[in-house]
Structures are given as C-alpha cells and as structure tokens.
Length: 287
Image (tube, rainbow, N blue to C red):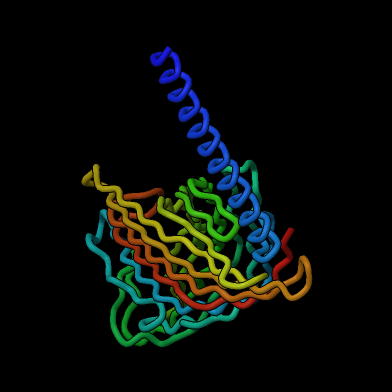
C-alpha cells in the first residue's frame, strides 16, 4: 500500500512539473510572438524591392600602361594628371534591389562616365605601338559604362536586422583613345574592351528608427594563378534611406571601388588601375 502511495505521489509531482514546464513554454512563446508583433508594428522592415534614381559625384583616378611587342613597356599614364581629364564628374545613376526568394535577392546598378579633353603634353608618351611626342596636342577620350549585378544571400532575417553574403560583378565597358596630329601625320591609339570586375563579400542592413535604414556591403576578389594575368578588386558602400511617405523616400550612398589588372587581357597588355569613390544622392521608391 505504501509503495502504491509513493508511486501516486511521484506521478503527481511529474504531472505538476510537466504542467509548469508547459505553462512556461507557452508563456515564453506568447511573449516572443507579442514582441515580434510589436517590433513589426514599430519597426517597418526595409523594403525588399526598391528603385533608386539620383546624382553620383565620384572622385576618379585612372592609370594605364599599354605595352607593345615592338616598342616594349609603355608609359604609365595618369589620365587625370597627365591628360587632365575631369577628376570629379557629376553623372546620373540608377540602382535597384529585387527580391527573388526569402533567402535571395538581386542588387543592380547602371551608370555611364564620359570624359574628354585636349591638352599639350609635357613629355613623350608611349601608348601601345604609338609614341606621342613632347608638346603635341593630344585629344583624349575615355568613356566607361558600368553594369553591376550582384546576388545577395541572406543568413539572418529579423524585423530590424538582415545579414548575409553576396557575390557578383561590376561589368565595365571601356572605350578610350588618344589622337594627335603633327606635320600632316596622325598619331592615334585606343581600345574598346569590356571586363567583368568580380567580388564576394558580406552585406547587412539595420533599422535605426521607423522608416530609417542603414545598409551596405563590402567585398574583395583576387586572381593570381597565372603569370600572364593578375587581378584584384575591393569595394565598399554605405547607404542611408529615409521613407517620408509610404513607398517614397530619399537616400545617400558613399561608395568606393578599386580594381587593378596586370598582364594580358583581351586587347590590353600592361597594367590598368581604376579607383572611384564618392557620394550619391537619390530618390528611392520601395515596396
């Protein structure tokens, strides 16, 4: 009889403890659901789809050395210093974010930088198979079109915080030429090439206040397996968006990119270094 009572007493304690645990789990679950609901109401999540149109004001530094099989190593040219191309143009730019799935999205961008200048050079310059002589008047054109396509993978998705990794490329279409005339003879050299500038890295976004978002990404890429081609690139951007009316907002971006190519690629043989960084101010439409 005593053994039976002990069993009943033990069973009662197990039942009570199980009930308390169930109540605790239910309370925690309800509290978490309430906090999530409150957070969703208080912190509007950053829109997944957005279009940004605005003005980009980059600071440029472009260096090129174009070698020749006949003349050997070319002259390193700083297009902004040696040829006095505009270092700080003001251009139109468009960007977009497109959600594909809860864990995947697209980051897109497009802009064109066209520059030209005429200058009397103060030294001899060898560009590929052409030598431009001291005191020649050189007409320079350097046009670049950038098309950015990045895939963003999400690891953490919270009401106020997103975090993940990304991979993609900023495809650059380059068209440059140098031309001069002297004693009826024309000196000309140029290239029309395109090159993908890849990178991989991390991205994140955070809601500081309601309808106020900070987001950005950083990336890097290096290729050096071949003696004939070495390439490195790193990029960084920081963005701030504020939505003042439902789907309409304003924003600002600071972006920096540096790419260096050394070796033989397409019609280029030599070295190419391109740095650009600056602010963009834009109108954003987001859903």
